[in-house]
Image (tube, rainbow, N blue to C red; front, top):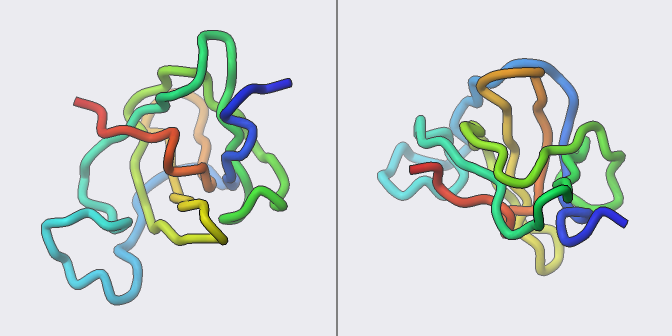
Length: 110
């Protein structure tokens, strides 16, 4: 009953500041490393939420929810589970949320 965001993953530890993932090499293509770019929640309707999960798969516990249009999310490591790309996120304002979400619901916050 949550809509398309129901598949998002995440974790509840507060704060942000992701280290680059192993092998990221510091290239200019973000590819899951923390680049300082911020992201927002897209692709879900008003009043729907994106699940933030404890790990990078829909089987992990939902630890938080992000409202449609939530902005200023810091992006950490990304990894594939089956056909789904999951990315670590952390809120940069408001209530501290950190966890994993389905990457298809993220877009660069310009």
